[in-house]
Image (cartoon, rainbow, N blue to C red; front, side, top):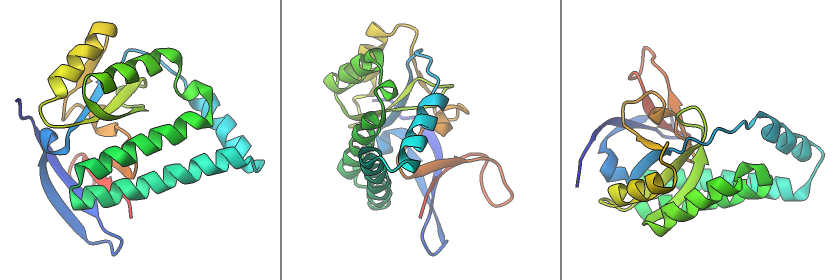
Length: 193
């Protein structure tokens, strides 16, 4: 079981107090895997926004579910509840997939099924690594098995390592990556309140 050090996770609470949580990637059960599948989400995102502005009930419901998943993920991270994070990540991805068929094309669906079959508790697509990445939430020790299974069906794919600038952009519901600043580290996770 490999342990890779990761920068602290900075949790900003609703009262704006900051709590630095030292963490290792295996503590958080997280892997970001670049699939090699290039996607262009700009047009899809615009279609979703347009449908929401036009009052489409299905789109509005899915966007509300994403917001609920973000709040749930934040709460689970604060409680260090791995099962709660997995549930929130899975809920976010299920809602996003209902927004448009292009959100998860067949080749991405295949990789998602492979990751889940290899032991990932939750999977969602994200833009880390330039697009076409999967965020994998799994039990400690499962990373190697999951990455091996994904590389078998997507040989151009690779896991993004902690500290890689693109790995820090992974989209966990309720999280965003912050850049360098006077008050913070070069890159950290910020749990939104």
